[in-house]
Figure: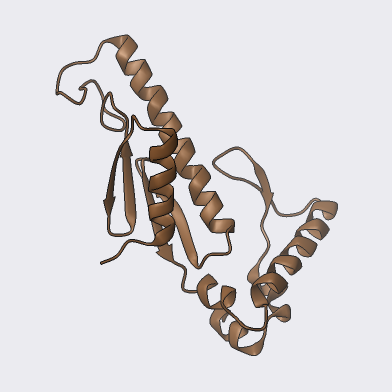
Length: 165
């Protein structure tokens, strides 16, 4: 089985900027560990020895960095024009990249439905912001506006509307 190209791109970018991380790819998932200990390790380092408090703090900080990097790439893939979707899985060091069964056909629609839906979402979110409705705080702490597919599906061609229904 070949790996999704977006997953390979993420692996290459992580290796380029963070050569001290241990990276493994399994099918559609990438797992990242720091060089001190496995992700969220209680007290054992990579050699099975008990870590000092200083080493434990450093390992924890690297775990947070790994999680932030994977969340960044998950968001990047989610908003890219590719047909893939991505999410960070628990415990926080695993990124899964899969073909999105809804987004992929809409992104590939010859009628330009992907651009149309994005424009409609932007307009609807501006309306909701002005009204002060439907704000949601996501894990990163950012406040976002949720827009329903139903609010925007009128801009899609008939084929793409069938995908959503």
